[in-house]
Amino acid sequence: MIKHLIKHEYPELKTKEINKAKAFIDGKCSEYYFIDYLRTTNGNIDDAIEFYLLDDKLRTIFTQYLIRFEIQLKTDFVDSLQQETHSGSFWSKKIFYIEEARYRSNNGKISKYLLMKRKIESNIARLSFKTKGPSNYVAMYSSSFGTFQELFKLINLKYKQPFINKYTSHLNFHDYKDLNAYFEAIRRIRNRCAHGNHIITIKMVNDLNGLRSQIFKQGKNFYPCHFTVMEAVIFFMINQLNCGIEFKNKIEKLLVLHKELLEKYNGKHSLSGTTLSKIQLIF
Image (cartoon, rainbow, N blue to C red; front, side, top):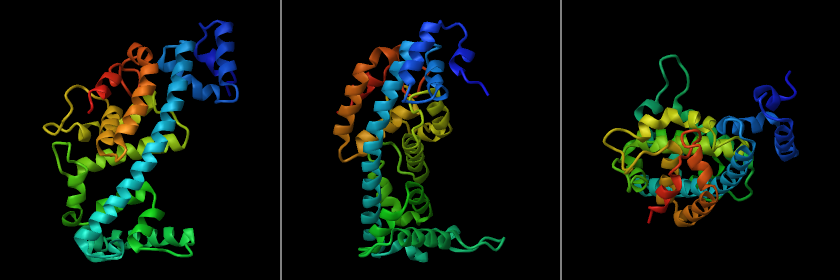
């Protein structure tokens, strides 16, 4: 096992520089964690430290507003589905699911509908509510974002189309798969924030790039210039969050402080050298 990762990967660094990095990360993270910022900056200690600080603050902002957005999405989903289905517990009714989900597969496994129903019932039971409240809201409150995504997938299109329309109003599409690509990108960013993983480095780029073709689908791209997937998610949240302007202002204020860093390493991280100017064009 290599004990001195920075020295091993960057043997050209002077002892003074290595000691500076170690003094900074002491009590904050490991060499293994910090070295990703060194890879972003080609071994520049000062810039790697700045990337760490940017990443740390950006995760804090994302965590706050991703949680708000998750609550908003679930609430709007319930409100919309209740209006369309006229049911106080649409999640537990087979009739509201797509045909593929309502029946057992040929290999004899239980249906996706029943699996979803049991999962939500288990989630509700685990929380041990003394007073449960309205069934649909309790179901969403007790469910993870991944479970919400799965339910969103399995509900029949005719019942969820108004919800889709609401969250694609600023885009050139009103399609389940395209909207869910944004939800999946949000889930991945949310999980990395929750687990204390990097979101500004190339690792986040690699994590999101599998969604690029769906988010930037030909003929359905409303963006005026080249965007990274992370930038597309930020724009989506600014446009769709009830507190989108507040989110925009906090992101913008942070990026102003690190504008030169982002420009210097354009293409080496999940934002870009022009993220700030793009955000400043909104509203």
